[in-house]
Image (cartoon, rainbow, N blue to C red; front, top):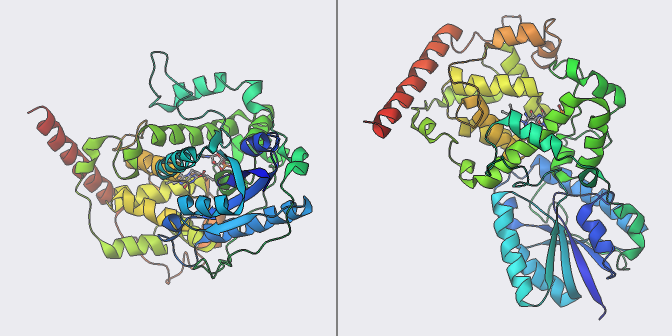
Length: 440
Ligand SMILES: Cc1cc2nc3c(=O)[nH]c(=O)nc-3n(C[C@H](O)[C@H](O)[C@H](O)COP(=O)(O)OP(=O)(O)OC[C@H]3O[C@@H](n4cnc5c(N)ncnc54)[C@H](O)[C@@H]3O)c2cc1C
């Protein structure tokens, strides 16, 4: 058997400008492309999970290009260690190339795979691809990671050199794939899933006009003023470098949003405990309400607050919710209804097409006031004022809540003033109790 190298696709489902794939294709070894459906990840998902459908379609698109290049994607459904044992039985594997993944589970998984391959004398080579600055690269002057966004952004931006923005032309090296006839894959049904009809925008770079007006329109949910590329950044169906080059030419406001993504990514990489804990531990003493009826009405979009209800229904129907509305709906759950932010985080995680652990967790903690650089707890969004400011003619609300303004629309589930007063009192009590415990 001729020696080959494997390229393991994960959050980088594209052939163009792919850093790890480019390095692999330049290695001089024929490259076998691989994707592994990991049962550990799949087992926690609904049978019609939106992202599994998205990934499956993205793999089909990848396969079309790979077949045109004379090769085929190896798709396995197994624990990664076992999948590599299978692949090492099938090929003479000299090396495994991949791109870095910074989530806590991914890091453990990669360490285990690298160790096992290392025992067999197989190199495991991992490259920076999904970010402009890898977690740990943006450090404070005296060392340590940033906990406040604005100084993080300044340093992050100063580090945006040509070297980190330049493309990796993997698409020009397609001749270096291992030549192989088309293989078969497990179907979605064999993986235990069925197709979800929710779909994403196509993975194209945004129009220049959109980015030029982004600063003025990004807060208006009724218009298509944002890129909707979150899902493509999550699964690497667009290149972050291409997007950042475009942002540098057109919109610093947009660049700053890309930096928020990396801010939360470095935060979770530094503090894996945030998966279940508040960044500010004292906020875990809050006496959250267990109110199933209120939680159900928030999920269903029947709270009687039109902007909240429109957002929750948009999420359910499309797998997307506008950022401004994510802030309002999240704040409403945590502050008006006093329900634990982790329940809202889990609901978003189940339905968002662009769900990304670090961004979802970081933003929920930001809204709840318990995150680093978070809004102070006593500043509570007023959903009615937010609607008047960002959806002044009600176009967004009417799109998702057609019965708004009729007798069929429910009365508000809570009174705004009373809910804010309750929220501030409960937060205050928890924080005072914690302070007393710390400094009796
Ligand atoms: C409660 C809550 C939960 C969220 N959950 C997620 C999530 O699971 N996944 C996710 O990608 N974003 C999340 N966000 C951030 C933001 O709402 C989405 O990134 C954005 O709405 C996606 O739409 P877009 O692609 O049109 O964004 P654009 O406005 O076009 O922005 C471009 C990209 O910048 C990044 N970005 C923009 N805003 C933020 C932000 N506040 N934090 C981190 N990255 C940002 C995203 O990658 C986004 O795709 C959440 C925000 C809130 C308030």
